[in-house]
Image: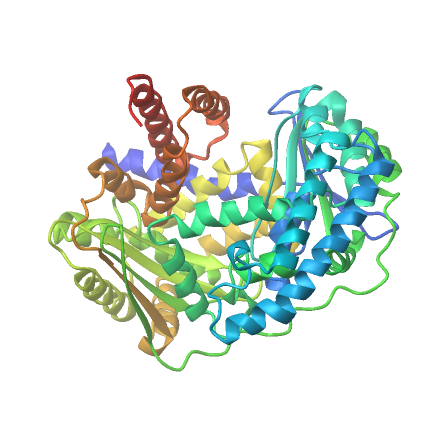
Length: 585
């Protein structure tokens, strides 16, 4: 009876890719070059997930302006001459005044402060503590101008408030190495509001608070990278791993670049990468195509076509010739990452590498069975594919358990690699992974928002149809394919290794967090840990209660693979509130 039930489950799951392939998108392109993907569905009545993606990320930057793509993500929420100001003319005067002052500060920094830095007279040319009297005076004038602007002309958060007062929710954006994505959920009867708001900021963004927003980004960098246990080392490892590719620098940018790019450089970057031909709008939800298409044409058709072509990304990653190794000490559980150069998005070997990762992952996967349950040297272990537009990687990452050392995890990984390279995976393992991937592909189509994100990301990378085609590629992977990619990519000279040892004298990590890592993987666990470190800096119970409310309202939209991490974070925020109410710090 059990075999029959298993067979039935296998047949049902095997049919899921066919169900997942029913994403039938209507696509059209405006005369100005902006493309739209429309996918009507009624599973979530009266709601539309709408957004647009710019095919630009940190990979399109260069030294001197790293982080500018992410900076634009901030700028695009500051409003236009219509939204975000009570006096557009006065606001324009403030921006011009601040641009002059900032340029004078920049000129002095590059001329005098960099000279003093190279001579060893100061340790940081950007630190205000090292200002000359002239620079201190200019910085004071700039600060005063920004304060007057906030008082006299800025309407704070108006862009968000216009949306939320009319029933929209979840307005946000993100920047990656390859794309910048803006999105929101709007009631179906407010679609025209979305079209007007988004086309307005694409035609009339004014980069308000351009200079003060740098401080916000610096703080974000401090929280995300500099204040996290492994953040600065992860950044260094990334820069070591990518030798020639522009994936070499972080999405948030290098600190000196965040300080130095000008309004003119920003405007040129915007004109190049935010032109209509480099943008794609995505609309998913409860709507009729014949009703929304004229609205899209009326509003987004106002965008002027670009005047120059988008530059191609020409520099590819050089083949690695020797193993690279980094050893660090941090306030973290001892851990290891072994990373290999792999393949870009939609490469012929991508599906086989993903199946290989599936064979290793999960409670029934080889890593859990052999490193966590068997040898009991790992508290968590995970393998994953990172396929980007112009290059990719395959990583193994694990954290120690008990007295185990990271080097023991590394050696255990090489045994797994040797087995993959020499022995074909069993048909049972292979089918298990294919069934899981089929189920995941089906689940990813159940929510408007996650459909929107997938469609936008895939279109920006090359073609939205990947959402239909990739599940078929997974199902076509054979045991020989898995063995072949293991031999092709898991070579010693093609790997980079990061060893993280725990600083002497520090307490071990929270056992509950370590247990979570075993469920969701080290990367997800580290993300949770970073978020919790940020929350620890909030000492206002009312603010934390607001965060709890926001999290609980979003709980239904959390993907299944993130549910345990989300629940853990929600519990910890509530624990923090209780601690503060009892008089804790």
